[in-house]
Amino acid sequence: MLRQKRRWISLALVFFLTAGLAGGCLAEGGAGSVDTGSAGSASAGEPVSSAEESSEAPAEAAPVAVLSVEYPVDRIGSQAGKAIRETARRFGVRTAADLLDPGSNSLYSPISLFYALAAVEEGAGGETREQMRTFLGADGVEDFAAQCGKLFRYLSTEVEDKEYQYTLRLANSLWMRKDLQFGAEYMEDVRKNLYASLYLADFASPATAREIGRWIADNTGGLLAYEDELPADTILDIINTIWVKGSWTDSFREEATADAPFIRADGSSVEVPFMHRYERGAEAYGGENFIRAELGIYGIGKMVFVLPNEGVSLAELLSDEAALEEALHGGTEQFVNIQWSVPRFKNKSKMDLMPYLKGNIPDAFDPAADFSRIYPEAYISGVRQNACISWDEKGVEAAAYTEIMMEKASMSMEGELEFRLDRPFLYALETSEGLDLFIGTCCDPA
Image 1 (cartoon, rainbow, N blue to C red):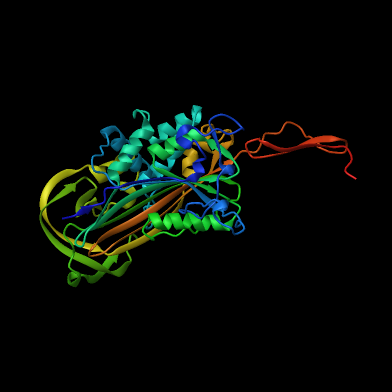
Image 2 (cartoon, rainbow, N blue to C red):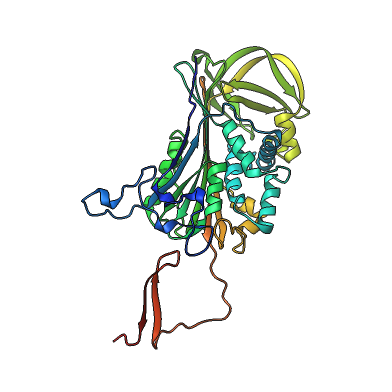
């Protein structure tokens, strides 16, 4: 029998202060905001001990501290409505038609981008929110964030068994600059609806990128490393990961694998290992420009292969959303016997998604963007995705992470101000939430 992991992990650590995010932590700087600067410090994933618990001198503050770890791995009893499933699917087809490069090995995870953007949309307002909802296709989905949560639970699954092992793991995380105040309601909503783990971070420290890399590796089965630079001006880093691993429902025999030529688009060829299998009574779909067939993946779903007809290029299948929709989901069904010849394959990709998204949701990248639920002056400063995939005789494994970086807009200036303290003045030393620790006057600095 298969053993289904049936657990929910929600670790709310000491950093929630006394009331916790669910109770709506308030900062002196304003209602509904969380003072991240007053939380303790720890390495990512580790709880913090009070300095009173040790006689040793307190260590130097670590660059990352944990607020909350959220990790659902059970989809039993979870239901995702048709509206959210169709929204996510259509988003995938539409964006893939725009982003995939028909002239090279390109790879993109639309569901990873979908969830990263959903986490941002939850904190948007005004025209910024309207643009994001239209781009995501969320206008027809009531309570979008909650529905995303249902889809998240529905998709997430992990089974460990001697004979069968399969994983579909999604994860979200928010890495927040520790000296700023972020919206308490927003953080609670993404934690509750999108299962986002929350971390405090010092983006000026190189160690923060290492901790983010550790989190990404842990949630992608070690397939992806974090090799990107993290701008020191970042105030919020939103990351989604997805990791899929499963066996073919009917595996290929390794002894049947043999080298054969693969013909490139330019007519040249290369010898690669081809896996072979014969399947009786299989479903296939034919269209004007393609033939499509599927291989089942145990516990996960299927791998769909679309072969353009002779004389038809991949560019034609990717020419627009309708063409890709037809290739992936259309065609005339037929039952046939299939002699499979599938090349072993491994690919990694990196995408800078900022130019594409800037053309679709421009307000989100404007320093005047409305992300008031997150932080009053926040705007998106970068979006990137790394992904990898491989398959062989046994099965398929793939992973991706999408990262959305946000910065704080500089104050708009009207004229110039020379701030010269050359006469008696008042001063105060305050915490980040505006609590005065010292107040004084300077009448003679000599």
